[in-house]
Length: 70
Ligand SMILES: [Zn+2]
View 1 (cartoon, helix red, strand yellow):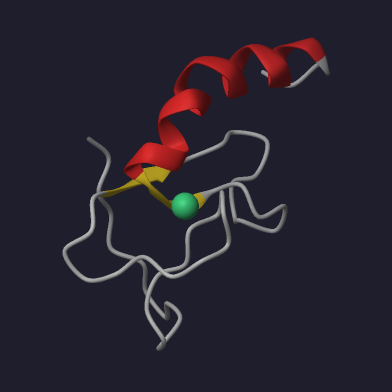
View 2 (cartoon, protein in one colour):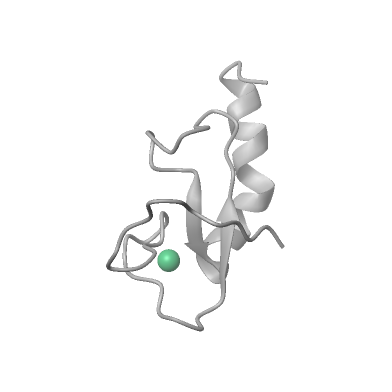
């Protein structure tokens, strides 16, 4: 579980970085922190629906390694 406070977040509420829809209050969510995208400019780091993020726990890190990020 990687919950984190997001200062200055979107006043409309969190948006899933995966499916680009709102994460409803109380909906299961998780924060992915992608090393390639430390400040979220690539739209990868941030809150995801838990079910949207789950496949990426296994795939993002190997993908980034392949393109040379550590
Ligand atoms: Zn989603």
